[in-house]
Length: 229
Length: 311
Image (spheres, rainbow over the protein chains, first blue to last red):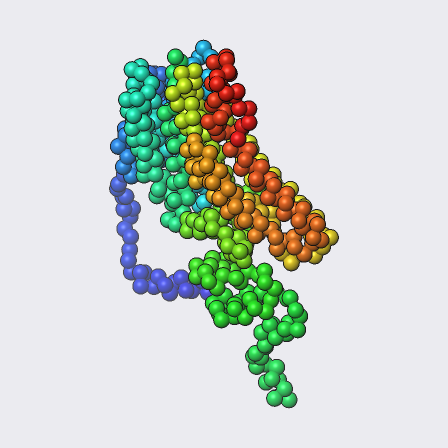
């Protein structure tokens, strides 16, 4: 202890002639940052009207539809994934594939449940495949992308229903074939544009092929849809 | 004394194991360390049993697979984790392409498992080849029905979607249950008779899965409604895929009693033939079926009695 005092005195030896006269008033401001309640108000959406909530979600879904129509390598689809859009598209597609031959006992077309199962089960299998091959995309992001890229095929279904009003065979078949082929390649291209970056480079074809098969089967279901006589 | 300790401390060059085991006839020598020494491989090939892993001296890309395998560690994770299943998808595009081409062009003496699988069986190929085959059969069956019945007023085109589920059940149970049964059978025979070659379950699944790949172009050819074309394509497809299976499994059973070996090979080939002809008969109608159907609908027989034989 005495040694400490000694060294302390030695250290401060050259300061010994500095004198502090009186109390020096300390001036300044002290600001304590308080968590402002206004920040919380931005994130808490409980108090807003329901219309705002629904419109916000619809706008997000609509923005993603626009992204699918003009596929660029943007990460908006991946970052804010949601499954509303895929659900909407899947239900629309399955309902529109139902209108054929309702009066016959065995219409032969896919039932609502079959279309639903094919789309969702197919998306899950493709996502699992991509993750098992070493992809870095998350499960729901991949489901989101695959579901949103069904949109061109849903548009093609609407067009086919309209074309079928004018007859089933001949010219209408050629038109339907062209429309379905174009929308199926558009779907595949759009989903590849979004998914391509998350795959290991020498396995890209292994990941893209199941996506191609998936949209090909959906396109086939749309093309072979035959309405009731 | 110093000399002794020097002798002990110096690095001793030991002869390679081949010279030690040279007296033993059919010993398979596998050395892990000299993957880069291509000169050793032909020696081993000549000396050891004909069925080894080193038959690919004529395949320049095979050494890439071997070095990748032997240099990287195979982590074994418990089976309830995701990483466990990632082991079975450890293939790349060029490997899958080579395996499919290898199953399309079998050659006597080239064992599919040893040449292409290299102890790296994958589940990607079998699963997606079966999925493709299911949808191709359903779609082409539909198209061929349409072409056969083209112009018939009584025929209404329906996309027969339930055939997809039937095709899926048939093909997936063939591609996964038959390998299970075969593997069980081979393990049982292995316990009685010592076989040189034995396959793991996943390798058998791989062989069956990739052997179905040749059916995809064959099924597409079945759209053409002429019987000659269909028979030709089914015979060619059966020969190619059947020979892949036979060439793979013959080394595993030939050391067994001849009756058992012949029985197993016959069963393998018979199931394969059954699958091919069953698919063709169920999913693809023929012109004769059309005539019987049309006559039945018309109510009265025409000039000749309707043929009841369905090809």
